Length: 251
Length: 232
Image (tube, rainbow over the protein chains, first blue to last red):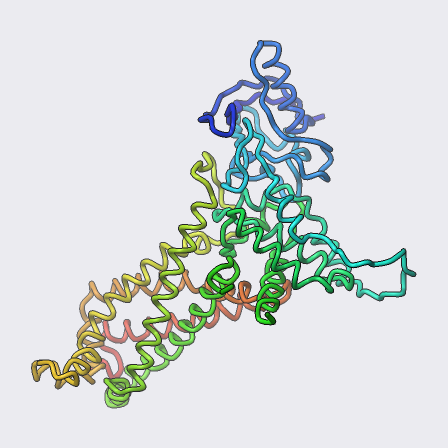
C-alpha cells in the first residue's frame, strides 16, 4: 500500500483565451499514493464544486496513455516527472509529503490556452490534414508476404507511429517547434512502400503548414525527445530534414 | 526560395555556413601551430595571406559566412521566441540529455563574435588591413608597413599580456561549447543522421572541435610563457 500524502498544489487558472491568468494555490490532504494525477485533479474539482467554486478545466479522455488528450506541464516537465508516460499514467507516489506541485498548461504560440489548463491543439490536426495520410489506392488486403518489409524498417515505422499527437514536444521545446510531431508523422509513411509514393509531396505540404501555423525552427536541443511520453526519437527529425531537402532539390 | 522561406531551409543555411567555418578553423589552427616551431615559417604564411587576390577573396568569403551565420542566428531566435509565446513557464527544468550549450547557442555565439572583434583588432588591423590600405594608395606609416607580415611578433606581443591571454582563453572556451553542439546539430539538420550515426557524429564532432581548441590554446600558452619559437 502506498502512503497517503498531503501537498500544496499551484494551478494555473485562466477564464478564457484573452483573459489574464494567474496561479491559485490549493491544499490537498491525505491523497493516496496510488491515485493518478488526473484522479487527484478530480478530487480537487469535487472539493471546488462542493465549495461552490469553478472546477479546474483540463483535457483528458482515455486515461490509459493512448489518446494523447491529457497534457499538463507538471513541475517543469510536460506530462510530469515520469519518463515515457503521459499525465494520466503519472501517480501521486512520485511526489513527497509536503511538496509544492506546480501545474501549468502547454505554453506555445501555436497552442493558445482555451481555459485553465486546456489548450487548443487543432494546429496539429491542420498539419495532419495537410498531408499526413496516404491517398493512393492501395487496393484490398494483400497477402502478408506480397510486399516484403524488413523487420527493422517495420519497427522503425511503428516507433514513429507511436506518436499520440499530445504536443509535449512543442511544450518542452524552447523554440516552440513541432518538428518531433511532424517528423514522426512523416516517418511512419516515408519508411513504408505505400507511403513512399507520396513522400516528397507529403513532407513539403506538412512542413509548409507547420511553418504557416507559427511553430518555431528546430535547433536540436533534444528536449522533445527527452519529454516525449512515447519516446519518439529525433532520428525522425533527421529523416524529415533529409526527405524535405531531397524533395526541394528535385524541384 | 525554400532556403529562406522554410524553417528547414533556414536551418540548412545555419548548418552549411557553420560547417564551412569549422573547416576554416581547422585550417587556421593548423597554420597557427607553425608559429610555435618556426618564426620564419609562420611569417612566410602571413606573407602568403597578405593583400593578395586569393587571400582577399578568402577573407571576403569568410566575412560573408560569418555575416550570414550571425544574421540567421538572430532571425531564427526572434522567430523562435515568438513561437514560444509571451507567457513563460513558472517552473522550467532542463531534461536529461539536453546539453547546456544547445540551449545557449546565441549567447555563446555572441561571445564568439565579440572575441572575433578583439582578434581582428589585435591581428588583422595590423596585418592585412594596412597592406590593403597601402595598396589602395592611402597613407600607412612605415613602421606598421614593415611589420605587416610579422605574425609571430604580434602573437608574442599579444599573448605576453595576461589580460589578452585570459580573454582569448574565455573566447576559446565559449567556442568549444558552441561547436560541440553545433557540429552534430549541423549533420542532423542536413539529414545525414540516424540512430547509429547520432553517436558517431557526436564523437567525431567532439574530437575535431577539441583538437581545434587545443591547437589554438597551445599557441596562446606558448605565447604567454614564451615557449618554442615564440620565446625568441
